[in-house]
Image (cartoon, rainbow, N blue to C red):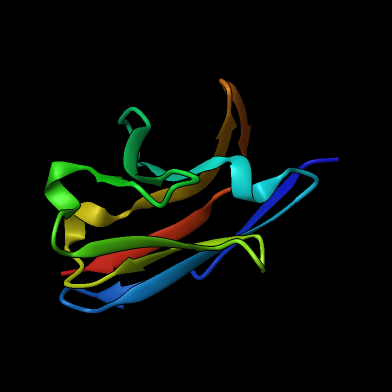
Length: 115
């Protein structure tokens, strides 16, 4: 059974930092492209950052220079370090695993940035 479990969401003031974690089980973690998506109220889910099995990363333009995605294959965990948080970063953040088009999702973790 595949499980992606996110943690680290919290209420933080603008300008603050958070680190999200997503632990995976039931998949060959090192082979998957891992990603973080987010969904704000009334908006579509959007891709925030992704990291391939070769550690190639990709970021949403609005988070470039502020967010960093990384992975630890030995721990089957992907991280999202979020710095200089803004109110517009407020959303539920979801972990995603993708291998050859087969996607798995976590349950989400709430990030709220107060201005």
